[in-house]
Image 1 (cartoon, helix red, strand yellow):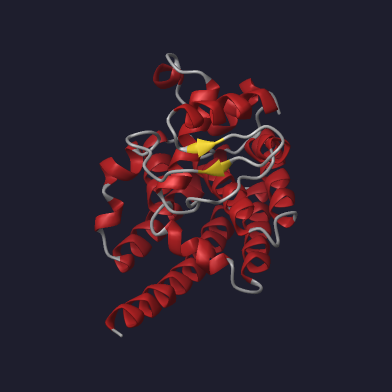
Image 2: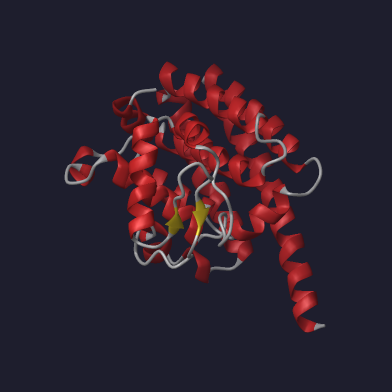
Length: 250
């Protein structure tokens, strides 16, 4: 996919990004993954080729985005080696939705209920408005997820791209941004959850059902599929939070 197609797929309003390059946008997406806990200090990022394929941009764009992060001390780039996360202090880079939304201040149950409601409405619009290019892109992202069965970090990068593409296909920027913010809740626990045996396979199976409903333009089936998927995430996150709480008490 070309860089121009990447912007179209992510439905970024031109008036918001006119003063920034695509590599700035990609750098912010990486920074969000780091700040939300998907990527930790010492983690190696997937190869430039894999990142370019998953994020739908050129390798030159990926290289430029990583250079931006490197100059800020967020990652270390070594010739001939994988790029590694050097710091989780990303400042305000890419965190506007998380910091302004203050979603981390909310209880898990409230976020769960909110996400179900937002995605139910979003499903109606997405089923009406999704285009063939987005459907193709979602199919490609599922293939990328299948290639990351044993790599939770790579899977979550592709997972986020999958959900954001669906959200933005609804054509409503407010709903899309709200859904993306709610998606980002407790992503550090999400990484632990998908590391469990069979978790990635189950998510991919859910994604296939979601894509099938979206491709068919079936809003009811899409809302149901998104709801089933969200409830799995809610249950696994709740279990991990309970375990963490018990360990802290002990």
